[in-house]
Amino acid sequence: MRKSMPHLYLGMVVCVWLLAGLWGCQKSGELEKYDWVTIDQYYQPQNYVEAFIKNDSAKKGLLPLKMKNYDQNTSILRQFRGKNFANPTESQLNMMYKGLQDWMLIDLKYTAENNQEVLRTILYVKLDDEWEVGDSGQLTKR
Image 1: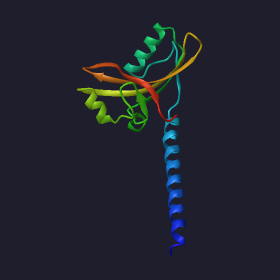
Image 2: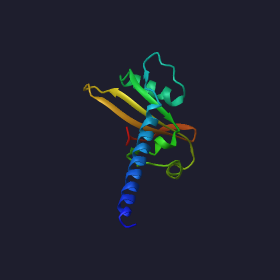
Image 3: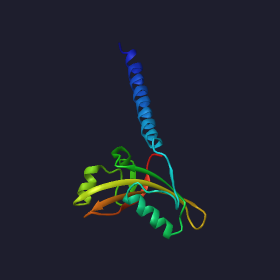
Image 4: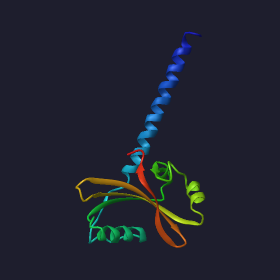
């Protein structure tokens, strides 16, 4: 009986390792469900936040740019790391922003003036019927 115990522990460790690997693949695969959309002068925004992004980027001369809109996907929100949050939950957003009406998580990819590609994840929040940037950073699992 004692001789089989190390094999049992080794088997358990291997199973846990495999399950963790599969879980990680599933999480990163979830990001792949969302397509990059090109925002240029002809793009028709789907909501107020996308219209704000288009107009603000046009003013700054950043068009065209690419966007992934994760909307309110809470599992992707858990991968967000910004200046104010690290892997937040929806309840943490509600605690941080009193009267939170809505939120949206969006990836933006654009070329800066120095020809460097910039990739940012922005958390938009709606408070008092106004959308604003709540935080910016990146997703921890790409």
